[in-house]
Length: 113
Image 1 (cartoon, helix red, strand yellow):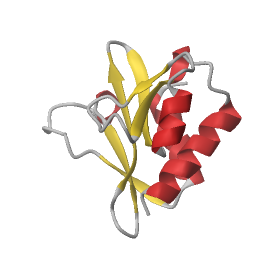
Image 2 (cartoon, helix red, strand yellow):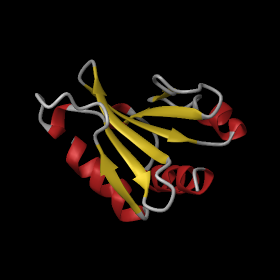
Image 3 (spheres, one colour):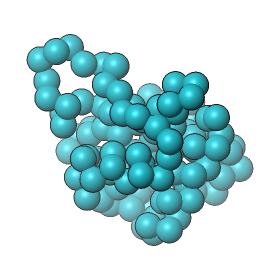
Image 4 (tube, helix red, strand yellow):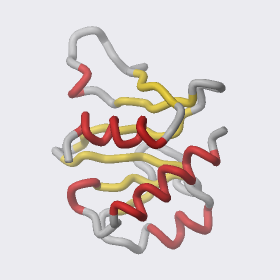
């Protein structure tokens, strides 16, 4: 999966828009961190970025779910986020199934409303 496909996956599952708050005007959107925000309150649902040639998806989960899911290959404490509430899923190197990923996106959507 590439960055655009991941952005579309999250957008199709939420009522949200993509934002590029870290843009310096010199890079293309494909090389920037995309922030997916609620249209109603503008809170962050997800952050999609590339680090060390890995596509990461940052999501907010309950602390209990974070503790459980970081035991899964390809899921680490949130990159540049509160490690109690956020995880980073290494999209192309994880054992998380598409159904589990969809559930995690829904959970992040609900927790940030």
